[in-house]
Image (cartoon, rainbow, N blue to C red; front, side, top):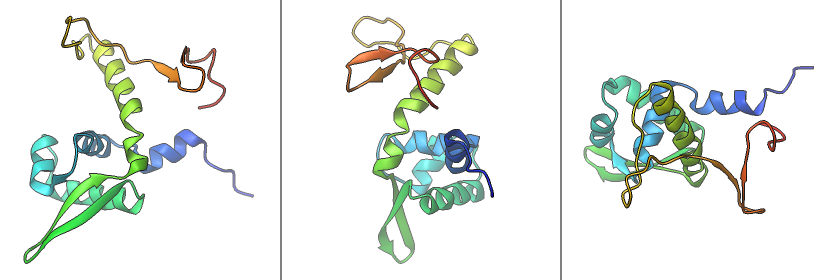
Length: 136
């Protein structure tokens, strides 16, 4: 009997490459047209962007809504399930900024670097990875 992939492996199958995560990040700001996505994701080739959008549609993470029939054009937006990726992407970006010794985002009111943390909405308490997390 085949073993079930881990939850992390399942997530990586859906969004586990560089371009896909950058496309998701660009769509977190709201719906975008193809050309807008090309501008937002610097360096992505049109064929790669098309392939990633099709993959995200197949995974039900992106919804493509037609806005013109001649020529056929669509606007892309994240599904509700894909919007849940916002927090993990911010955590990953925060880690990347600290790892590269780069400066991450700052709080607009006071200028302090923003920290991304895990939070339990039920207990309303911070969660420490490794100590408080049961399963990834």
